[in-house]
Length: 66
Image (cartoon, rainbow, N blue to C red; front, side, top):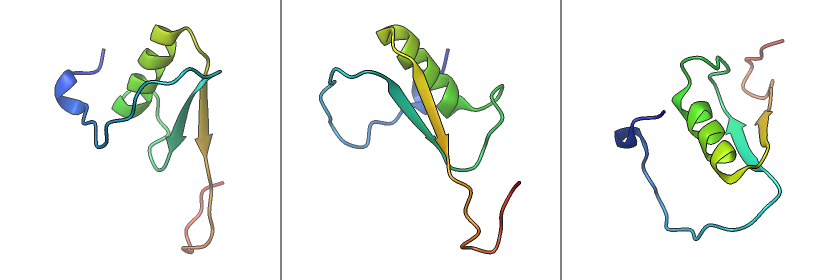
């Protein structure tokens, strides 16, 4: 469980119904110590929805991971 002190709601958005929870990864891809992905998984499980994770690999900045 993610500690509530790590959760910061930046804008008030009402909960909406949907088909999945999406987690957009930017840097950290490790699953064991990634609080954001753990929180997304908790939310998806709580709603009984699948978790869809996306990660874009960009060479625009001259750095890429393959």
